[in-house]
Length: 533
Image 1 (cartoon, rainbow, N blue to C red):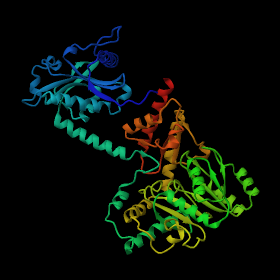
Image 2 (cartoon, rainbow, N blue to C red; image 1 turned 90 degrees about the vertical axis):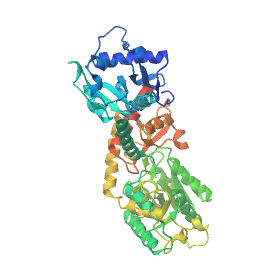
Image 3 (tube, helix red, strand yellow; image 1 turned 45 degrees about the vertical axis):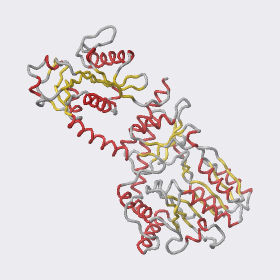
Image 4 (cartoon, rainbow, N blue to C red; image 1 turned 30 degrees about the vertical axis):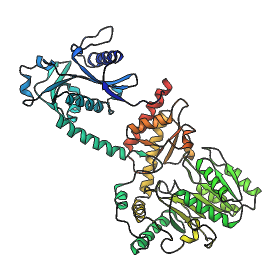
């Protein structure tokens, strides 16, 4: 696949552009709509070619669509009506729109709208105030969708019938405004990033409330409601809320482990497991690393043997959902392993809580966040607690978990973020888990059918994170830009994705299945195009 090129809407001026116009004209008005006779050259030069101004949509050297503007009378419609002017608004200055043609595979895209926008802009600049068209009866509803008004009887032949129509600029702007507003709504619902995620209207409204003091009674009540909801959701014994990202929550866990003075094991099979290794290194923890490799399942037998050889190990630290690869590590198996070896199990649940049922009973410490699968706004994180906490006073204040084990919060916290989190938590539960799982199954089936490679095998994959390995010849940034131009946001810009030629579709926030279907279809087209090149 070549480098991504944005679509260009312009007036045709170059010889090669006119050659492409003649060939698209033939394919549309000879082969598809039998309006003209076939010829060996497969070129159709319009009889008014020298008087036409062609508006074209170009993708590099490829012509995707066109339309011709012609202001010189008589129009083609003048030959079909005795008094054409009697059908249109009085004292208007019309321009005729002819030869509207879009390549079939681009007809359900924004190409038609782009051509019409550019065409109206050119016509308006030349002093015309109304456009006339003979629209194929196959697309009458589509023309009316853009503001065209039918007039007079049908014209043409039984094989190729056309409906005369006119378009005023006011009608066009009204219809286009509604279309663009609808597109913006669709774009808002097509955020497949791992963060920030698309959030509901109720969450946004909660965030927009006037801020309250973190020392106020109302804040204290809201905080306790959020903590109770989090405990109920996860089965954790206790939880504290922090002002910061999931990285802060893992720093607080690392700080707690640094106080125990005992050795441990860190498990890794992707970017975020490697980041836990970095947390351990920065806190100078006595630890060894078990690295299964990117996108691989943990070999529990190997880990068991490692722990048996190191009876002094007292803690185990791992990621539940490895967001970089889409692998879902087996939390229950890690709990069983920890019980057998009498270990304190610490888990990064930053990307899993909110997307699937996460049971933290039997987990010593776990990290979570507001801005991913819970589908609130980023800015708050949480540490779930399943045991005693080392007394305060031996760690930097912001990293001291014991400092948060008090009524209220020890430091300033945004009431707006907390209010948004409270509302988001009301939507988390079995219904949401099932909706994500069903959508993920549908998406994965489509990608499998299109022979698009997914990093995590189905047996160990998280339902809400699909990491896609693109062929070497495909630029992930180009694919992401093409999807973004269609209103679909996917993850691709992180270094760990770019270096491995990966993109991600994540079902963490608000989404629609129609947007997922569009994403899969566009992605398949990009991959097919690259393989055919």
